[in-house]
Length: 327
Ligand code: AMP
Image (cartoon, rainbow, N blue to C red; front, side, top):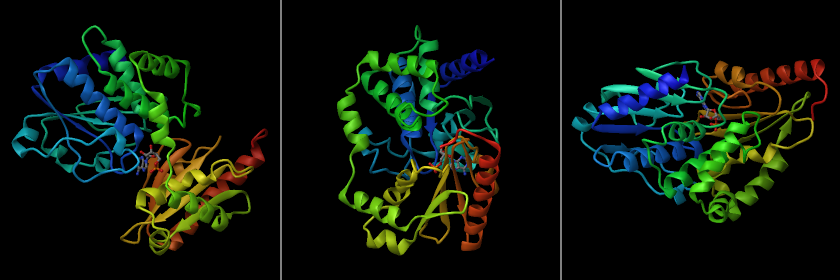
């Protein structure tokens, strides 16, 4: 089934002269790696085609080492292009809204498929990253496709970041085989990991702030809220502030942990994480979605924030009552 879908995606790519690649808002390692990696494959394989990756509304300090995207082009180019949207669960999360101008849309994603879209849709929820899917695509059609060392680096970066450094349950033997195939192409992993682990002094101080100010509910949901005022006081970008969620990740008995980051417009970004427990249903209730153990949402008041915490606490209580062997 997926083989057929992949075959029809390759055919569409062959049919179009102009192809545009899209990613999701709040760019992360996977959507950035997948889009840049896919662009590399298409450019190397079909040098006469026009391949664009345009995302003018976004940048990421953390991912700056992967380089920028293409310059904006005219609406006429969009209108004759095939749109390939990577790692993006729903249309409203596509960062470059001009995708609507494109002729046809292909969705390639590994998020839970609550809002299907696209003329062709290839979704594999059990894959650890979209970069893994793109690497699989490349391997499947290896006789017809090419990739450069840069492309392999982009895809490996997304595989590493979205799988929590190959720790999450979606990581399979196939994930490792595909990652190995990228390493075989030749990746400078020393430099890559130095970039991924580098932290500013402000971020280290912020981690201390989080651990000092976090709260834990009766049943073990760990969470913190960081206001606009505190973000300014600690000299944090929104991206730095959001990255703080990982500070809560390994606390004994706290199987769900949540970061609440105030946005400029006062809405609150929610980053929900868990081990063993499914949390995407909670995210979906609060204008969000994502993966079973890593989801995102938005709340619009302190009342809604409390209600989300209560839902997470109730879920954790039920889990602890009905399961053994958790940590
Ligand atoms: P975040 O905490 O924002 O990194 O989100 C965790 C995961 O859930 C990422 O893979 C996001 O792409 C995904 N995600 C976040 N918000 C949403 C949403 N509103 N709908 C679907 N997926 C989301």
